[in-house]
Image (cartoon, rainbow, N blue to C red):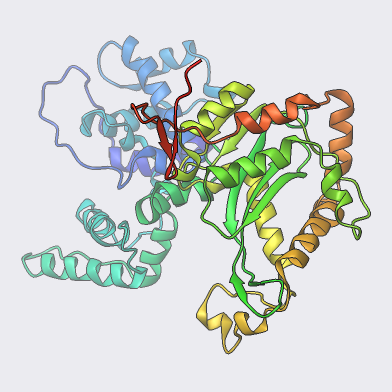
Length: 462
């Protein structure tokens, strides 16, 4: 037996020397040939299945009479081979077509038998049925039952079915075989069923790419986080609490280009302060801290501001200000922080590298915290913390090379700014920027004037 015939021996054995007449009107039983869709098999099996369908469709359109060697060989000689591979023998094609027609022309009937290995004890479609039912009822659920639990359910299903059979009992898979078959499932489909769409989008990084910026301030990410750190009042005795930082990171250079720290809930006021700090020159900031020995040149007009989808970032004030300033906004989808990688990396580094060794550090879990009490251990006032934070961002974070040692944020900033310098706000434009970033609010005019924050403003006639 030659190589091609030997390769498809399992199909030829099923064919059992049958020469199917395509013009026959005899009834054909339909059976299930695959326990899962074609897309869930690996690429090699999909390729082989599509190749078989290619030959069947070519011959099916041209054959006259039965699928015999006399009718098939001349057509094989006419057609070009699939992807320059050796053509199969006529008996293999006839066997494929027999299975294909008996399955009511279902493409899964053409899946190679060796692609369905791993279940040698389970030879019939009824056994496949209970495996699939166990998957659907137990394993592929949001509750994420274990393989052991799913296997017990699978065995129970077969035991109940065997109790109804007079003969031909179904032999269940061993636990090892069952587990191996579970592991052979497509990981993406399993994760989607058990963990949900948000999980697989994060794990497989689906659709998380964006066009890389070509200049500084072209794309800037903004977000906030509560720091794992307790701050004291200036008397170094009274605890203020954990500060919240609103920060902005330039995606081209990875530099922190501005931030604002407060002890209030994030709001438009904190965003406004962070934006002003970002877009205006920071000479006065660095000059106010004598311990800082590096420049912070990052400032200028933002072209695209990528913001969180939280309620704090929505509102007429931000929308109106950005429109007036010519800043485009992009709202990041809920539950997809990996689409703002620069700002997320900054927050992670801030907590791990800057706050990790400071007195007053907070732990995120009770178990990790142990007997440590951050309120009692806190020893840094807000003014000192503010100076240390500025110093770390300017002298460490913006100056430190990435993990691959291929770029330094501040060097990348200077490089980008030398080619396409961002628009700067100078003179009266600085005050105009502050005004446009103000809070937008409306009041009704009555005969008593306008009331705002418990104050009444009378109208003055010209």
